[in-house]
Structures are given as C-alpha cells and as structure tokens.
Image (cartoon, rainbow, N blue to C red):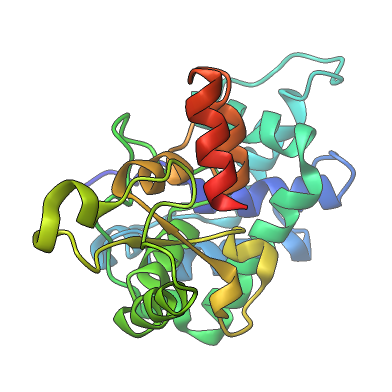
Length: 257
C-alpha cells in the first residue's frame, strides 16, 4: 500500500503554516513542522492502515510540502519544485484570500482538538461532480452538510418560514415545491448555512444562519471551482442575474428581500 496523496484538509494546514511564516521554508527539525506532522497523522481522512505506514506524514514529508508552497509562489525567484494541481490551487487560494484560508485552517484544528471532526460520517454531495471537494477542506464541507441535514434545525427553520405567512420557497430562485408537486412537495425545502462554518466559528447554529433553498440552488451554493467554493444565497442570486432574463431575476430578488 502506498502513502495516499494529500487531501484539501492537509494542504490547508500546510498552506497556513507557510503563510504564517511569511512564505519562508521550514526544515524538518522546526517545532512547527513537528507539530503539523503529528496533527496530519491524526486527521480522520485516511484509512487507519494508511496512517500506520512508515513515513506517513513524517516531518520530512511536511518540510518537503512546505518547500512546494514556497518555491511555487509567483514571487519566488528560484527554481520551483514539482507539485500537483491541488497544491497549486491551494497556493493561489492563500494568495488571493489569505485571511479566509487561515480561518479554515483554524476551524480544522479546532474541530480536531474538540473531537467533533473525528465523529462525522461522510455526507451525500460531499464531493462535487469533478471529484474534488471545496478548497477549504473535505472535513469542513462534511461538517457543514451534516449540520444542514440536522432534522431539528431544518424543522425549526421551516416552522419559522411558515409563521411569516408566505409560501415555503427557495430564497434564491423562488421555487415552490408545493406549487410544482402539490401535496407531495408540501413542506419540503432544504437548508443552507448563509456563511461558511469556518467563518462563523464553532458557536451554536442559529436560525438566522440558515436559508431555505431548493435542491438546485443548494447544490450551486456548495459547488466548488478553482479558487472558489462557497456561495451565499445573495452571491448566487447575483450570479444568476448575469444569465436570467431581467424580469425573472427581479422576481427572485424581490421574493428573497
């Protein structure tokens, strides 16, 4: 069995270490490299037999990955080391939105320390149709989807929406399941966190943190692309406005306001 390739979660943590060190290399004996090596060996993203392999996420391998980040930075004047496309995507993400990526790394570290991320099961739709997860990390996507599928929160959000008197419909595109499917669709809607969980922190989820979405818009909010991986309902409405006829977009925007 070969040592598995690094996942998004592992690269987020490596990138955070590099960014916080001013994009300078760190050698094997450095205390931060040693600590990251221990953390990577504890992440619940690889099978136990993989984590037991000799050399799995050793300090040497961590130092080499740090070098990949440093030497592939656009401002590095020397020769770049060879690395995969995912590492290059992560470098670009840290350059474009360092604060957000550092928050993601902190959320992963806190989730591991609390034990929360160790107990999460894989979620449907965790991986997109291209086979990769959001650049912030598989574990954070798993946590977000698990919370969004919490039946208690979903029921409370639906109850809140119905108490407002209007139909239960998507806050982005205005789709109404009951209107389209009759009694089969009555009371059905999906919920989505308005902001990514690594930005809101580990506090208890409130109903104001959630939005009612149809299945299509929910998927589009989560769908990852290079350098981009999380959309708020407002951002998705704005994106849709570039492609929808003006009247349809105005109607969707009005229903969500």
